[in-house]
Length: 310
Image 1 (tube, rainbow, N blue to C red):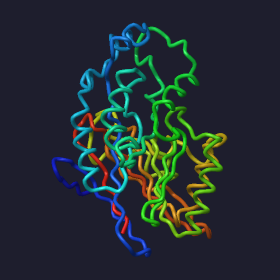
Image 2: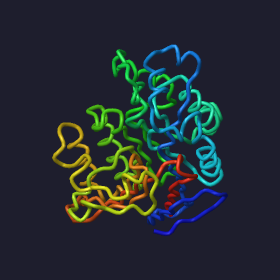
Image 3: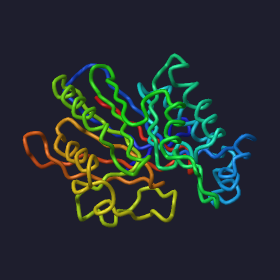
Image 4: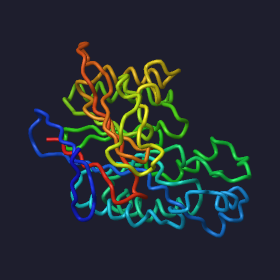
Protein backbone atom coordinates (compact mmCIF):
# COMPACT_ATOMS: atom_id res chain seq x y z
CA UNK A 1 0.00 0.00 0.00
CA UNK A 2 1.29 3.43 -0.94
CA UNK A 3 2.36 5.84 1.82
CA UNK A 4 2.33 9.60 1.51
CA UNK A 5 4.21 12.27 3.44
CA UNK A 6 2.87 15.75 4.18
CA UNK A 7 4.41 18.05 6.80
CA UNK A 8 6.54 15.10 7.99
CA UNK A 9 3.41 13.04 8.72
CA UNK A 10 3.43 9.60 7.08
CA UNK A 11 0.00 8.25 6.21
CA UNK A 12 -2.03 5.83 4.18
CA UNK A 13 -4.72 7.61 2.22
CA UNK A 14 -8.10 5.89 2.02
CA UNK A 15 -10.53 7.17 -0.63
CA UNK A 16 -14.22 6.28 -0.29
CA UNK A 17 -16.51 7.30 -3.14
CA UNK A 18 -20.21 7.96 -2.59
CA UNK A 19 -23.04 9.27 -4.73
CA UNK A 20 -23.95 12.02 -2.23
CA UNK A 21 -22.19 14.85 -4.01
CA UNK A 22 -21.23 17.98 -2.11
CA UNK A 23 -17.94 18.66 -0.36
CA UNK A 24 -15.47 15.95 0.53
CA UNK A 25 -15.27 14.84 4.17
CA UNK A 26 -11.78 14.25 5.59
CA UNK A 27 -11.04 12.28 8.75
CA UNK A 28 -7.57 11.65 10.18
CA UNK A 29 -6.97 8.71 12.51
CA UNK A 30 -4.05 8.25 14.88
CA UNK A 31 -3.56 5.60 17.52
CA UNK A 32 -1.55 4.01 20.34
CA UNK A 33 0.44 7.01 21.54
CA UNK A 34 1.03 5.29 24.90
CA UNK A 35 1.59 8.47 26.92
CA UNK A 36 3.89 7.62 29.82
CA UNK A 37 4.07 10.19 32.62
CA UNK A 38 3.80 10.57 36.39
CA UNK A 39 3.20 13.45 38.75
CA UNK A 40 4.64 13.56 42.25
CA UNK A 41 1.18 12.63 43.53
CA UNK A 42 1.15 9.58 41.24
CA UNK A 43 4.36 8.29 42.78
CA UNK A 44 2.80 8.38 46.24
CA UNK A 45 0.55 5.59 44.97
CA UNK A 46 2.49 2.31 45.42
CA UNK A 47 0.78 0.74 42.39
CA UNK A 48 2.00 3.51 40.08
CA UNK A 49 5.40 3.70 41.75
CA UNK A 50 5.83 -0.01 41.00
CA UNK A 51 4.62 0.52 37.42
CA UNK A 52 7.26 3.21 36.91
CA UNK A 53 9.97 0.92 38.25
CA UNK A 54 8.96 -2.20 36.31
CA UNK A 55 7.39 -1.08 33.02
CA UNK A 56 9.71 -2.46 30.37
CA UNK A 57 8.72 -0.20 27.44
CA UNK A 58 11.10 2.62 28.37
CA UNK A 59 11.26 4.28 24.96
CA UNK A 60 7.87 5.92 25.60
CA UNK A 61 8.85 7.11 29.08
CA UNK A 62 8.45 10.74 30.13
CA UNK A 63 6.13 11.67 27.26
CA UNK A 64 8.54 10.54 24.52
CA UNK A 65 5.68 9.92 22.06
CA UNK A 66 4.12 13.36 22.55
CA UNK A 67 6.15 15.11 19.83
CA UNK A 68 5.04 12.69 17.10
CA UNK A 69 1.47 12.75 18.38
CA UNK A 70 1.35 16.54 18.36
CA UNK A 71 2.77 16.60 14.82
CA UNK A 72 -0.01 14.30 13.61
CA UNK A 73 -2.67 16.25 15.51
CA UNK A 74 -1.52 19.57 14.04
CA UNK A 75 -1.57 18.09 10.56
CA UNK A 76 -5.02 16.59 11.18
CA UNK A 77 -6.31 19.91 12.41
CA UNK A 78 -5.13 21.58 9.20
CA UNK A 79 -6.76 19.12 6.78
CA UNK A 80 -9.52 17.20 8.55
CA UNK A 81 -13.13 17.72 9.52
CA UNK A 82 -12.74 15.13 12.29
CA UNK A 83 -9.86 13.63 14.28
CA UNK A 84 -10.25 10.06 15.57
CA UNK A 85 -7.87 8.54 18.15
CA UNK A 86 -8.37 4.79 18.38
CA UNK A 87 -7.20 3.89 21.85
CA UNK A 88 -4.16 3.43 24.07
CA UNK A 89 -3.42 7.13 23.94
CA UNK A 90 -2.26 6.47 27.52
CA UNK A 91 0.07 3.63 28.49
CA UNK A 92 -1.55 3.42 31.94
CA UNK A 93 -3.95 5.38 34.12
CA UNK A 94 -2.17 8.13 36.03
CA UNK A 95 -2.59 11.83 36.70
CA UNK A 96 0.47 12.43 34.54
CA UNK A 97 -0.97 10.66 31.50
CA UNK A 98 -4.38 12.30 31.97
CA UNK A 99 -2.65 15.68 32.05
CA UNK A 100 -0.93 14.94 28.73
CA UNK A 101 -4.23 13.84 27.22
CA UNK A 102 -5.82 17.09 28.35
CA UNK A 103 -3.09 19.47 27.20
CA UNK A 104 -2.30 17.82 23.85
CA UNK A 105 -5.77 16.72 22.74
CA UNK A 106 -8.81 18.04 24.64
CA UNK A 107 -7.51 21.58 25.20
CA UNK A 108 -6.38 22.04 21.58
CA UNK A 109 -9.00 20.14 19.59
CA UNK A 110 -11.86 19.43 21.98
CA UNK A 111 -14.83 21.45 23.24
CA UNK A 112 -12.74 23.95 25.22
CA UNK A 113 -10.79 24.87 22.08
CA UNK A 114 -13.99 25.83 20.28
CA UNK A 115 -13.22 23.20 17.61
CA UNK A 116 -14.84 20.09 19.12
CA UNK A 117 -13.38 17.92 16.37
CA UNK A 118 -11.81 14.98 18.21
CA UNK A 119 -13.04 11.63 19.54
CA UNK A 120 -10.83 9.32 21.60
CA UNK A 121 -11.60 5.64 22.03
CA UNK A 122 -10.52 3.77 25.15
CA UNK A 123 -8.00 1.01 24.61
CA UNK A 124 -6.93 -1.85 26.83
CA UNK A 125 -4.25 0.25 28.56
CA UNK A 126 -6.27 3.26 29.75
CA UNK A 127 -8.13 1.52 32.62
CA UNK A 128 -4.96 -0.07 34.05
CA UNK A 129 -2.60 1.33 36.71
CA UNK A 130 -0.63 -1.86 37.29
CA UNK A 131 1.37 -2.05 34.06
CA UNK A 132 3.93 -4.79 34.74
CA UNK A 133 4.25 -3.48 38.28
CA UNK A 134 4.48 -5.89 41.20
CA UNK A 135 1.77 -4.29 43.36
CA UNK A 136 -1.84 -5.06 42.50
CA UNK A 137 -4.40 -2.28 42.14
CA UNK A 138 -7.12 -2.72 44.76
CA UNK A 139 -9.37 -0.07 43.17
CA UNK A 140 -12.20 -1.64 41.21
CA UNK A 141 -12.23 -1.62 37.42
CA UNK A 142 -15.52 0.30 37.60
CA UNK A 143 -13.91 3.06 39.67
CA UNK A 144 -11.05 3.36 37.19
CA UNK A 145 -13.49 3.59 34.28
CA UNK A 146 -15.30 6.36 36.14
CA UNK A 147 -12.00 8.24 36.38
CA UNK A 148 -11.65 7.93 32.63
CA UNK A 149 -15.21 9.09 31.99
CA UNK A 150 -14.69 12.09 34.28
CA UNK A 151 -11.71 13.08 32.13
CA UNK A 152 -13.30 12.45 28.71
CA UNK A 153 -15.28 15.00 26.71
CA UNK A 154 -17.68 12.40 25.34
CA UNK A 155 -19.07 9.04 26.38
CA UNK A 156 -16.23 6.54 26.53
CA UNK A 157 -18.33 3.58 25.39
CA UNK A 158 -20.16 4.92 22.33
CA UNK A 159 -20.16 8.24 20.48
CA UNK A 160 -21.33 9.15 16.98
CA UNK A 161 -21.36 12.26 14.84
CA UNK A 162 -22.61 13.22 11.37
CA UNK A 163 -20.22 15.25 9.21
CA UNK A 164 -21.53 17.50 6.41
CA UNK A 165 -24.80 15.55 6.20
CA UNK A 166 -22.77 12.85 4.47
CA UNK A 167 -20.66 10.72 6.80
CA UNK A 168 -21.45 9.21 10.19
CA UNK A 169 -18.38 8.42 12.31
CA UNK A 170 -18.87 6.08 15.27
CA UNK A 171 -16.38 5.36 18.04
CA UNK A 172 -17.03 2.07 19.82
CA UNK A 173 -15.14 0.95 22.91
CA UNK A 174 -13.96 -2.64 22.53
CA UNK A 175 -10.70 -2.08 24.38
CA UNK A 176 -11.54 -1.44 28.03
CA UNK A 177 -12.92 -4.97 28.48
CA UNK A 178 -11.64 -6.62 25.26
CA UNK A 179 -15.22 -6.89 24.03
CA UNK A 180 -18.25 -4.90 22.94
CA UNK A 181 -20.84 -4.00 25.57
CA UNK A 182 -24.59 -4.38 25.97
CA UNK A 183 -25.07 -0.60 26.26
CA UNK A 184 -23.67 -0.17 22.73
CA UNK A 185 -26.14 -2.43 20.93
CA UNK A 186 -29.20 -0.17 20.80
CA UNK A 187 -27.08 2.90 20.02
CA UNK A 188 -25.52 1.16 17.03
CA UNK A 189 -28.85 -0.17 15.75
CA UNK A 190 -30.41 3.29 16.02
CA UNK A 191 -27.51 5.04 14.30
CA UNK A 192 -27.41 2.55 11.44
CA UNK A 193 -31.16 2.92 10.91
CA UNK A 194 -30.71 6.70 10.73
CA UNK A 195 -27.74 6.36 8.38
CA UNK A 196 -29.73 4.10 6.09
CA UNK A 197 -32.67 6.52 6.09
CA UNK A 198 -30.49 9.56 5.38
CA UNK A 199 -28.03 7.93 3.01
CA UNK A 200 -24.97 8.43 5.24
CA UNK A 201 -21.72 6.56 4.74
CA UNK A 202 -20.76 4.97 8.08
CA UNK A 203 -17.18 4.60 9.35
CA UNK A 204 -16.38 2.70 12.55
CA UNK A 205 -13.46 3.40 14.89
CA UNK A 206 -12.43 1.10 17.75
CA UNK A 207 -9.22 -0.16 19.33
CA UNK A 208 -8.88 -3.93 18.87
CA UNK A 209 -9.19 -5.40 15.34
CA UNK A 210 -12.13 -7.63 14.51
CA UNK A 211 -11.79 -11.11 13.09
CA UNK A 212 -12.23 -11.07 9.32
CA UNK A 213 -13.76 -14.53 8.96
CA UNK A 214 -11.27 -15.17 6.15
CA UNK A 215 -8.93 -18.17 6.59
CA UNK A 216 -6.38 -16.46 4.32
CA UNK A 217 -5.78 -14.04 7.22
CA UNK A 218 -4.32 -16.63 9.62
CA UNK A 219 -0.90 -15.07 9.01
CA UNK A 220 -1.21 -11.56 7.56
CA UNK A 221 1.95 -9.58 6.85
CA UNK A 222 2.29 -6.03 8.12
CA UNK A 223 2.90 -3.29 5.57
CA UNK A 224 4.80 -1.25 8.15
CA UNK A 225 6.34 -2.69 11.32
CA UNK A 226 6.57 -1.05 14.72
CA UNK A 227 6.39 -3.95 17.16
CA UNK A 228 8.47 -6.74 15.62
CA UNK A 229 6.41 -9.32 17.52
CA UNK A 230 3.47 -8.42 15.26
CA UNK A 231 5.17 -8.57 11.86
CA UNK A 232 2.59 -11.25 11.06
CA UNK A 233 -0.82 -11.39 12.75
CA UNK A 234 -3.79 -13.75 12.82
CA UNK A 235 -6.97 -11.86 11.92
CA UNK A 236 -8.95 -15.02 11.17
CA UNK A 237 -9.36 -16.81 14.50
CA UNK A 238 -8.23 -13.92 16.73
CA UNK A 239 -10.53 -11.06 17.66
CA UNK A 240 -14.26 -10.59 18.10
CA UNK A 241 -16.26 -12.65 15.61
CA UNK A 242 -19.80 -13.84 14.95
CA UNK A 243 -19.42 -16.62 17.55
CA UNK A 244 -18.33 -14.27 20.37
CA UNK A 245 -20.48 -14.24 23.48
CA UNK A 246 -23.13 -11.65 24.27
CA UNK A 247 -22.95 -8.13 22.89
CA UNK A 248 -19.69 -8.82 21.05
CA UNK A 249 -21.26 -11.45 18.82
CA UNK A 250 -24.41 -9.38 18.37
CA UNK A 251 -22.53 -6.23 17.36
CA UNK A 252 -20.26 -8.21 15.05
CA UNK A 253 -23.38 -9.54 13.37
CA UNK A 254 -24.87 -6.05 13.07
CA UNK A 255 -21.67 -4.72 11.50
CA UNK A 256 -21.22 -7.59 9.06
CA UNK A 257 -24.84 -7.45 7.87
CA UNK A 258 -24.76 -3.75 7.02
CA UNK A 259 -21.84 -3.61 4.61
CA UNK A 260 -23.79 -1.54 2.10
CA UNK A 261 -23.57 1.47 4.44
CA UNK A 262 -20.54 0.60 6.62
CA UNK A 263 -17.66 1.39 4.29
CA UNK A 264 -14.64 1.15 6.58
CA UNK A 265 -13.38 0.05 9.99
CA UNK A 266 -10.32 1.65 11.58
CA UNK A 267 -8.38 0.53 14.65
CA UNK A 268 -4.93 0.08 16.18
CA UNK A 269 -3.61 -2.17 18.98
CA UNK A 270 -1.14 -4.20 16.89
CA UNK A 271 1.55 -1.46 16.61
CA UNK A 272 1.93 -2.27 12.91
CA UNK A 273 0.06 -1.34 9.74
CA UNK A 274 -2.18 -3.99 8.21
CA UNK A 275 -4.94 -4.05 5.64
CA UNK A 276 -7.69 -6.66 6.01
CA UNK A 277 -11.19 -7.24 4.67
CA UNK A 278 -13.99 -8.46 6.92
CA UNK A 279 -16.33 -10.94 5.23
CA UNK A 280 -19.75 -9.31 5.29
CA UNK A 281 -23.12 -8.94 3.60
CA UNK A 282 -25.26 -6.08 2.43
CA UNK A 283 -28.67 -5.59 4.03
CA UNK A 284 -30.25 -7.59 1.19
CA UNK A 285 -27.89 -10.52 1.72
CA UNK A 286 -25.26 -10.03 -0.99
CA UNK A 287 -21.73 -11.17 -0.12
CA UNK A 288 -19.12 -8.41 0.12
CA UNK A 289 -16.35 -7.18 2.42
CA UNK A 290 -15.75 -4.26 4.76
CA UNK A 291 -12.18 -2.88 4.62
CA UNK A 292 -10.45 -2.87 8.02
CA UNK A 293 -7.33 -0.73 8.42
CA UNK A 294 -5.05 -1.38 11.39
CA UNK A 295 -2.71 1.52 12.16
CA UNK A 296 0.77 1.66 13.70
CA UNK A 297 1.18 3.94 16.74
CA UNK A 298 2.87 7.33 17.10
CA UNK A 299 5.71 6.00 19.31
CA UNK A 300 7.18 4.65 16.06
CA UNK A 301 6.82 7.87 14.07
CA UNK A 302 4.29 10.52 13.00
CA UNK A 303 1.90 7.96 11.49
CA UNK A 304 -1.74 8.42 10.54
CA UNK A 305 -4.54 7.23 8.30
CA UNK A 306 -6.15 9.94 6.16
CA UNK A 307 -9.68 9.09 5.05
CA UNK A 308 -11.35 11.13 2.29
CA UNK A 309 -15.02 10.49 1.59
CA UNK A 310 -15.95 11.95 -1.78
